[in-house]
Image (cartoon, rainbow, N blue to C red; front, side, top):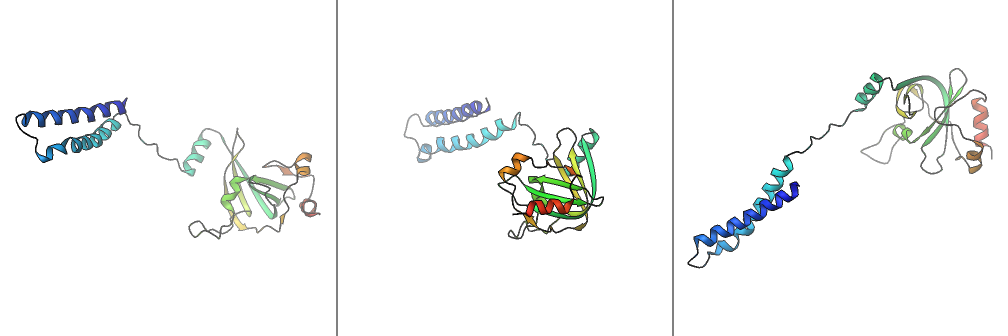
Length: 204
């Protein structure tokens, strides 16, 4: 509707300009500038029309919510779960495609935490982009995982303590591994020790 009004405004302005010039010089030839005046008026009317009619009813731009505000909102709604861990060492598993990073993390109590997903990209070291370069931030000896209560996805990780450089990056999961069953993001493995898992993933 606003586009139609703007078009009518432009067309009407041009007709009025032509009519005014024709009326002023009805008994003689138009001056040289008369040939260019309608086009100039049409251009000015187009700019004014778009500005005028787009302003009406335009929705205000919504401010982008910061991560801290998003977390505060979820917490106020009871939709935030905080999981706190202390870790001693970790090893990674290579990606097969773009499913995200994979980490088996030995916890201080001897259990093993498995984390996997593209959200872990935010914590990986970057050394090939001057604008984005960063050192490794995760895994680390102390951290808190923030999850959405109902949907289960990770919102953020609060890192503390010392960074743990992965002991190794094991080969990617094979099709047979996926068929047998790979742990899900956030699973706690307490039936198999960290060293056994590492040997299992690195065995030829």
